[in-house]
View 1 (cartoon, rainbow, N blue to C red):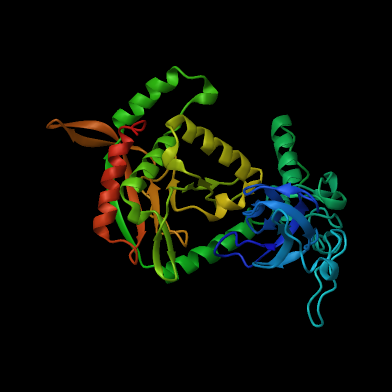
View 2 (view 1 turned 30 degrees about the horizontal axis):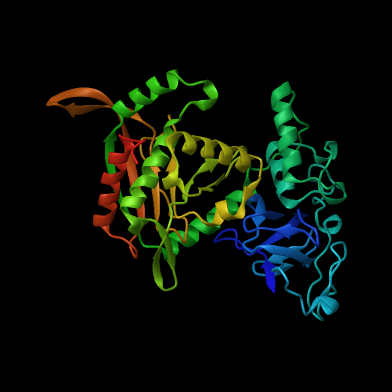
Length: 399
């Protein structure tokens, strides 16, 4: 019998709220299919199944707060029979009776009401939707919900904000707390644990990217606007290829030590509107061309800002890139996302005097800083990674 349980969606997650089932008893699912949507402090996450089979029964109910590891559904392999079906069958609309002394999970209509004085008082909404609405100053009372029983979910708030931007009309506003306050708290907790438990070591190097940017500009001139390559894709591609050359930096630190990954699931930091950030992974990034890398990044950015990331993208990253983009500080030193063992930080490009062929000339440079877990790697391996990154940066389409 395959028990489908609430996954851990990050080192800081203790529980999540089920807001939508995308399957029903009797449905056939395959490994990787999205079967549910779960809300956490970082937004809505699409949860995939890692087993193929038939959905026998749904245990968790809409609106239920579930700790990591709690059973959500039973998925049976072909020909398999659930021996507990008669005694434990639960209707998706009615939760099972809790054991004596166990707190009963409230339905969405009972737990999703905003506190007194919040925008949209008395409106049913998911926690992430409320937090996002507060950050944007949107009155939930003016929105139609697509969630169970008409409850407002994160996507409804994002649609309202998008419509307001398109029309130039500001959404209904009221009290505006700090943008992304809930996510900021979650990020702070995770990063505090990272700094307390991981012995960070940092190595930096300036890299001349003038030729890279000149070539990229020339290449983009022949592309339509929606197919143009951004510098971030070149950096991510170089990161993934360098991780293949130096596998000691690509993987997870687990209880018994460093576990190298078989593929490069390259995470990259995405700033969310209203504050906060997420770092979903581009799966198998080392196998993608530069154009495919750019397409994958666009897709992840779009879904991250709409609150529709998948659990594998959130939890299976093997190293992470954080780039400040084309403007900003010239260097950044990042904090590692556990259980990963490295974070690559890239500052904004700066024009600096540089020696080329014995002459000092103005060149466009970036400062690359690698934060590494000293339990897994030392300065020598990190230096090899930086050298490999620079090599692949100057030949982004090479194998």
